[in-house]
Image (cartoon, rainbow, N blue to C red):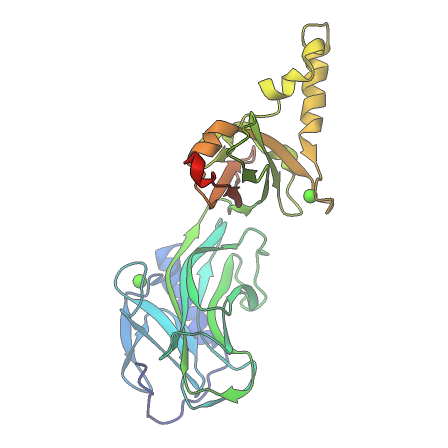
Length: 345
Ligand SMILES: [Ca+2]
Ligand SMILES: [Ca+2]
């Protein structure tokens, strides 16, 4: 149960104070480019009520919210940080409470964290939004009950200087719980945060995967499952390194392999034929089957190998790989598996 804090109303602290910024800069400059207390294991007794709060994290309070660190949920160490709404208090849309910290993100590519949204006592999260902001811009948010593990925020596009502080490389990371509507709610709504990490490598690109066929029929077995890989706008599918593409543990058979050579076999043994066939096959491995303007790369997987790992009635499989510059991508697709009639079993 969430115990309401019955102390004097909190004065909202809505200014990012210069002292706080300088203190953060000073401390972090001693410790290098990292988030201080990223797993929320280090706490202090905070006001307005003695309650464990995360050390090194500043906060903006609101009298209708509260926050703490404890062991009621965590994914790393033995504690996490929690922002929550107080039951019975009135809210206006847009009001929030947050933790924030200035961090030197020089050379960092990805911010990774775990989060969990829940309600007390029913367990159903509602009316509020949990979000992670970088430089006051929400780059991740959730409004649905659940556990969110290994969430990633791309930091690679950040400008060198955040206008809010003016120090090159330094940026504001903020965890926030915001009311989405006006109202008074009998339950408390909680957002937990834990296990924040900064990674220097590129983020994993979320790929859109389609399989053909996407349904396996026990009365028919083909040679190949065709897979199209679509990347978000700004990424070039021609940069996908075919040799790295896998469906679970199954390696892709790619455009320059035997399946693609078959149709061009006549050309294969002729002068210039092999070079022509390679060029033409590579062109043919880029399509736009869903006609959304984003090209897709075609690879194939061995039908029998996929059939061996697909379980009825449906299996979700991960297709992953890398671009030539090492940037990883990953996406999932569902394979339906038709059951055999009873007399066949
Ligand atoms: Ca922790
Ligand atoms: Ca497309």
